[in-house]
Image (cartoon, rainbow, N blue to C red):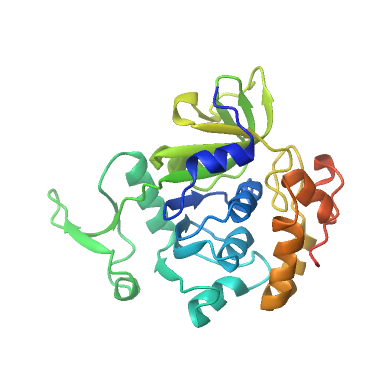
Length: 293
């Protein structure tokens, strides 16, 4: 079984210049992995994510990224991602190239990558202004109907990282609850790192559960609370106060640097991060957490 520490998994599989996807849809967002990437100083990354939220805001503000492919970006329920906006509008801490999609376009691109196809097909893009800002959007003519259809190139990350509830000792992974494109992003990647709440002898997976087979997984990392401040169904709730407080922290470059120094670079691992933001144990990861430096 490829059971590793988070430090070992990131060091072994995440390299400067790669295309990297940290996927999760409101739920099971791999915050712990994103923070370890910042700690290890990875740079020049092309980040991909259907809904980049504050973990990508932190990685972009820390200088990890050169490009972002996405379909929506924001602090969910709160407002803008200020570090993302600063990078796009003012090139701080470095210029950031953006590739814009809709959710349907991202899903089609990931599905194509998972299916080992060169591109995905959808109806929604033709007749819109999106091809004017995203030259990757092309079209094909259906050989059966003659209809013009939009295409997007397959997304095949060098590394995908997801968080899940459980893995067994054969590296099979169980995901429960709301899912976005974790399964497709996992199957499309050259390497897959999965952080989990626990490693168990048996997944006890119900019928029709989403189970990633062990042969798709390159590293399993047990990181209790690894999705905090997002939530993991069956383990802890979302810390809404964290998201609200992040809006103020992220508006100011100096305050952002202080926060990263104190709570990411200044701690050794995710357990220490949780303690630093006021979450004494993973079972208390619903908060209230502290965001201020």
